[in-house]
Length: 367
Image (cartoon, rainbow, N blue to C red; front, side, top):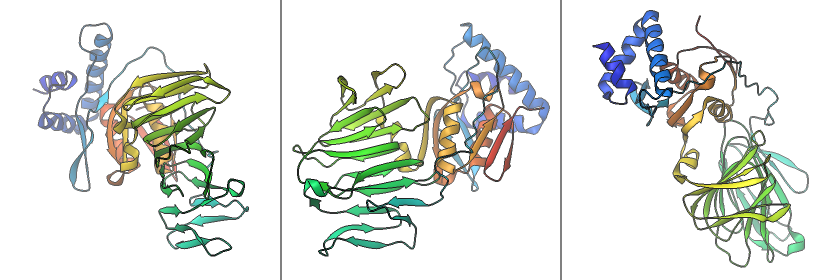
């Protein structure tokens, strides 16, 4: 019977009850785990040779908080590649060592944004410039162009934050992100902000004042729209994903190297090739983090490890050669998941050992 369930599982035909039965059987003994791994590897290798379909997408769920939570809606896509090697992620020199969100003001002062920090910012005339809350800052007003000054907000690993700029633009900032922005926009000219990391923009419409996101070596220009930008410094690319409206991505040093996006498209700038490519996507997948979810689509574990590090403020060192070659697809609810939950979930598809010391996670092969 269990052989039949494994066959259905690998062919994406197993019911949720059959999947649960399979997982219970795997957990029952080390011998069962080894047998399952051997069968899965044989099946995957056969898929590569064309003997079976390679679109294996089993449904995976785990128990958390006394209820079953389906984390991976499409579950894990198992990929076997030739060649071995050690893949490690050591982020001990992370840029964001502070555990607090830091606001650097134009005059050189810095302050931490905390639960106790709820204040108002006024100018010399007593005019309201901003209201500061534990989870967001709201700015107001415009100034003469020569009076525009820039603040910088740094969001550490493990946290997110929201800004409402003085023009009404809403910016959601993901973990490990820095945004440099005008305290108040000018009456004339363009609306420029500078991003390192990831942010979702809901830009207030203003045809006379284009909104420009400066990210690495490309600019993204809009009039009014919703889009996501991912420009983390450790990645050799910048992604701009459009939800609604239109945006243009162009190279800073060569504005003729440009693409105009339509909704449900993503533009990717490659820093090595200096090329911008586009493709059709589901934009909700790329903005899932704004709703408290981590979404993956045929994503390498190396990328998933980086996302987990930023989201949970941990360091991951992966020494498991099989896991390093895996791709995964699915959605994880951050508020209902811990790092341990995610690791235990991944272990069900690709068994491995791991240890946690302070905020460092080391993943190793099974004995």
